[in-house]
Image: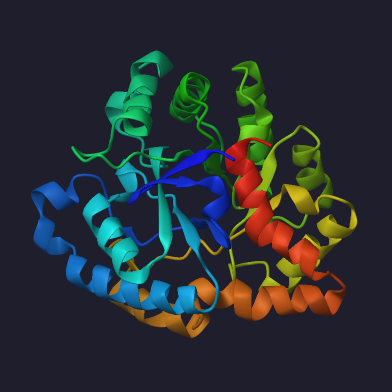
Length: 312
C-alpha cells in the first residue's frame, strides 16, 4: 500500500481500482488560460468531461492518469470539477511535454528539478493539489533540451520517489535512449513507464525495454498507423511471453483539445465513439477471445497500475 496524490487529495493505492494509465481531459498550450482565457471553452470541457467520465465510471473505470503538463495547458480547476462531477479519481502530472520552454532548454537539470519537486510535494498553480507522477516527452528523438528535461525528472524522482511516465516515438525506439539516461541518473527502473509503446509492433524492442526493468504503457487505443486489432495481438503476444504483469493500458484520449481543428474535433467521435471505454468494449473482449483469462485482464487494468505506484 502507498499514498497516491489525486486532484481531490491523497488516496490509498489499493483504492485506485480499474485504471487508465495515460489520458487527458483538456489539452491546450502554456499561458493561454492566463492571457487569452476566452480561447478555451472550459465550460464545454467540464460538462463533456463529466458526461464521458460518468459513462466510463458506470462501466467500471475508477481512475485515470491525466498526463497533461504545463505546456499542454494543464488546468487544475477543470480537472477538479470533472473529477468531482464524475466520481472518477484523477491523478495529475508535473513535468514537461514536447513544448519545452526556451528558458528550460538553456537551464540545467538542477534548475528545473526543484520546480517538479514543488508540484509533487506542495501543490500546483497555487492550489493544494499535488502531482502524482512526472511526465516527460521525446519525439522524434531525444534532443539536447529533451535530455535536460529527462535528467531533471530523474532528479525529482530521486528526491521524492514519484514515478516517471514518458511520451515516446516508439517506431524510432526512443524508449531505449530514455532508459539509458535514466540508468545513468540512477533512477529506479521499476518506477518508470515508457509510454506510447504500442505504436510499435517490434517485439524485440518492447521486451528489451522491459528486460531493463521498466513498465510499458500500451496507451494508444484505437491509435493510428497500427490498427487496434494488431496492437491487441501484440499485447496478447507479450502476455503469452510472460510480460503481462509489466503492462498498462490506456487511450491517450482527451475530451477537448484546442490544438485540433474544428473538423478534426468533429471527426474524433467517429473514429472512437467509445472514448474512455474503447478498451473496455473492444480490447478486453478481444483479449479474452485470443485466450487471455480474467486474472490477466485484472493485472492489466487493476493490479499493474497499483503496483507501478507502489513500486512493488
